[in-house]
Image 1 (cartoon, rainbow, N blue to C red):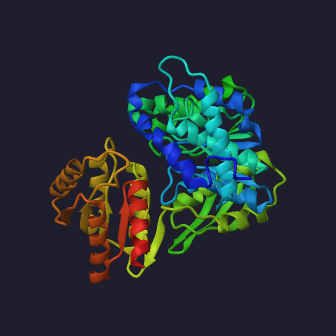
Image 2 (image 1 turned 90 degrees about the vertical axis):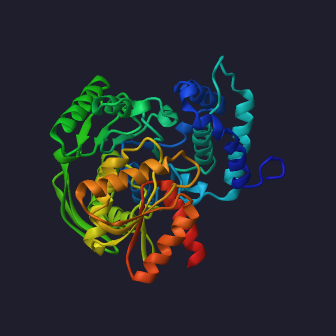
Image 3 (image 1 turned 45 degrees about the vertical axis):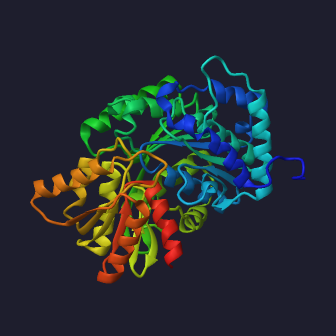
Length: 452
């Protein structure tokens, strides 16, 4: 069956897709719009309609929520194709059937179909095919070939003009909103919320996470979401109004909690990832699935959530030395990660930090410097631009402002920095945390596999 395809496996498709990455890196040169995705979908016979979908947007937690939705559906016997980004160690993490990779034949045949689509689509002047558009269409083609019964789909960036927004989902899900990608999405909470609200579809329910603890931010975001939901006759289920997390218990092996969902208490749910935020993500995923399938049995929640895993979400990749990786890359997510890390392992450990250019480095440095005895500053790999000198200066400034003296080490080469973090953690018997970027988490995971 594969003899007639130019691709023999997923890697060959990915290598071809990667030839489009340079265009994706230079986003300022062209405008986001859905014309190309709609054209590709039309030619392909609308693979995005092959199964009912859950569509997830937001500033943080959307990858976890998407994965948890898929895990719950799989536990109910519903074959669920899942789309997520970015990947951490293997590009196939983006396109999976439940928590497993598709077979190589599916990836290859979908890749062949995708290549044929690129030859048929007609582009207007100035339009170009992008890496993310093609990757997204690859997912939809894989989903259709697999004859899946449902899809759980995470947006890449924003929502309104994201390539995934050709979906007409069963339920739209929006996680917490914060300032991110301001050069593309706007520099206010209201503007960013409006972009995320673009995934709300006519008559389809919206499941919305509890918004920021900052009163002004919450009100701005809620006002935008309510307005968009009303305009599209979309029933809005705001998490604090119809659900509650009770008795969260965070331990090194994961998080246990009780969920009150539409008046019913579901006790002792467990997610094998440490962090109270994961209980909130799980509650949101449960609300989304129960909104679409009210008769779904609670045992599916227990089974699905307890089996859930996702790389670089407070992931312990080594026990001796203790090494945690987390893809946190915003002020709020870094604070959540640090709070969980220090509550479990105490202060004074080792931090390996690197983030992409354009992040709120000083705010993140302010949070970090008082919690670690040694801090190593590095690049988060090579895929995204990173101003390592700026990061180092921010950490030095934060330490001076707080009048504390952690050892701050400037080691731009990622591989050398990972080596040093592992060595220091082992020599001094200290726990280590690598955070600031999913790309850095991927570099650490790859290196640790060679060590252990």
